[in-house]
Length: 438
Image 1: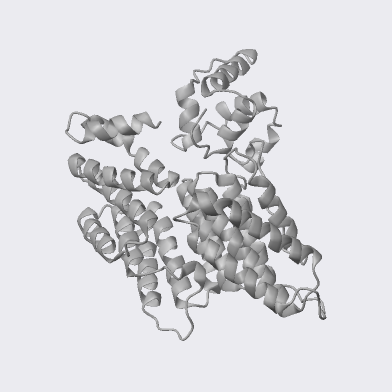
Image 2: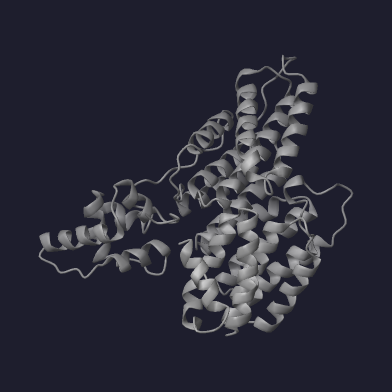
């Protein structure tokens, strides 16, 4: 079974218990029934599932649709891979969607399968709806049984759990889930004033966002997207536009990881104009720049980087929201370097990544592992395999020590590019370690 399921085709295949070779065999049989000849093999299925290739709409996709029992009309209407079975749809925004979205996310956390739950089109539509929909008029709440003192305790405990969630994932995972369950039940069953309601939904959004990042780091993408979806609904109900924009940018970051820069950029177009705090806007512009660099939109990428730098340096009387309070010059430098690496400007990319690493606080171990993986990839692009291996080894060691599976995956993804240099000292040792955990 694949270590990580990043594509709906992989989910649909594994849901039926098929290997890649078995799916290829069924496609060949479907072709034979039509009097055709298909050369599909497991290696081709692997390329479809990793986004390295797209099955031909006129030849391969009809055969895949037949194998999965999907009406061919959906193939041309929805496009690849949106017609595949096993997709999910986000809830529309409304007065009573916050709690159902939380319950859906909490239920999904018990499902160990990992696949992208929402289609690209549905996420882009969700971002557009969020941008166009103000939070509805609140009912006329009166006094209730949920007082401000209880909410203050829930907020303080939640903030501590969120802060510990990255470095002590194993210890906080169940505690975060339990805390969000408690808050969800209070929202659903309690009686409270409107200000208390806003605080409860803000807290639910913050907890769901933290759990989403944990699920994402563990490569459970379906569950992560559902928690971000729940966070978005609760931020919307609370009238927290900056928080909602931040959640959308998290979904965009996930889309980048899943090789869908087009949708990531589209989602951020809706989110950026509705941020208010300078730090929030800076972070979203930086993520937009990442998407545009992948798309080779050089002019727009540089413009977004300029905006990110400008807004990060803009003073504010208010502290930054908790979800982006970590945003700093270190992040701006390193991610700008990553953008420039994608655009082929490797020398300047190295300089900025080094600057980001020097500025990064020691406590941010997971981010350091990510930055090291960025550097290793950039050294590989420059042909410096020995330096790339040294840097990747540091990233791998750190990610393993802090139990950050996503960072481990970032290093493992370098294996195909490292393999031709297996004769070089250091590269061979790293390749052996990576294959041991494959």
